[in-house]
Length: 374
Ligand SMILES: Nc1ncnc2c1ncn2[C@@H]1O[C@H](COP(=O)(O)OP(=O)(O)OP(=O)(O)O)[C@@H](O)[C@H]1O
Image 1 (cartoon, rainbow, N blue to C red):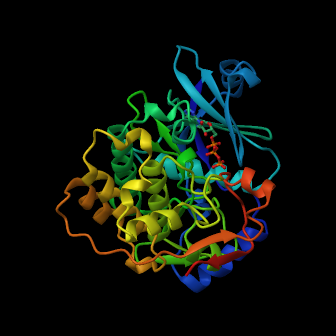
Image 2 (spheres, helix red, strand yellow; image 1 turned 135 degrees about the vertical axis):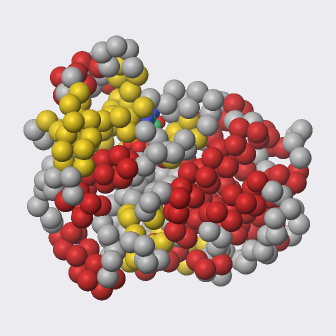
Image 3 (cartoon, protein in one colour; image 1 turned 90 degrees about the vertical axis):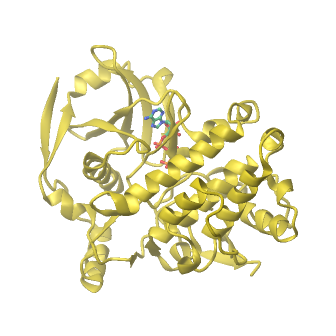
């Protein structure tokens, strides 16, 4: 049974909310999703029993994956529609925030490169988000698995780059709001049956008011390696922090390596360092994943490496807006500035085994980072 749910602010703000309130006073018209949440949002509420039945009572065999905020299950609704159900961990304020953000934001957005949220469910302590099911799961599932990455030929990777860029332009400037995603990464790019990309996971996104260009927070959230230096170290975020994460994603797609790949030697603290070093020495071809290197025009690889390096520059104002990125991707003759040397940074203790294993999970706070290789 599906009925419309009118959502109203339903939780008491904790410490984090207080911090953000203080900041809002300083920043003027900075709008958090909580404020929108205080407005009424009409959204399909899917019955809990129906979701439980659809997912075989949230059985492990239906589990598609596990993120920082809960497990995701495959389900089949009455009538046969396949869905993905995110079951948020109970009891945490951050889980509630994640839930409200997703519902309020995605309910208002529609673009072919954004995942569709079909409904939600609040049932006692349970909070569920019900999405369209994307049969090819997420980009990381293919790109970082040696036995699957050959399924991502260059044409597919190039289309993914272009689709994600268009989705970001929509978020940043073409929807009625300016939305900063704040956690763009390979596992948040879902792939449909044609391997077209859909940006997912808006649990950490923030909305800016019309004259707002940047904001800062003491509560840094996101994923190691994809965070821009100014965000990781000073908590400053803007559309240009998403541009940075996009640049990292582009470099991962070209090289077929993770930003934090253990295969990188100590000469290269991360993938950005390697890309920069090879590009400036005129050896950018060596950066390209050997699986895709043959049979495609080298000019497209070089364009994308160049673009990736422009996006990860240290100075946010030197990074292109996503609309310029799309223009460069769609027309190889569009002028491209020369990228400056990026700043490589890794979180303190990042080389520790435990930290590396969790490197691609979203974090709810990040304390210290160290700069290297300037
Ligand atoms: N709509 C969907 N269709 C198919 N698979 C999905 C869908 N949504 C999520 N998944 C799968 O579930 C996994 C977990 O997703 P989730 O967004 O919770 O976490 P994550 O992005 O891996 O990590 P984090 O929460 O740290 O960002 C994804 O990697 C993906 O494989």
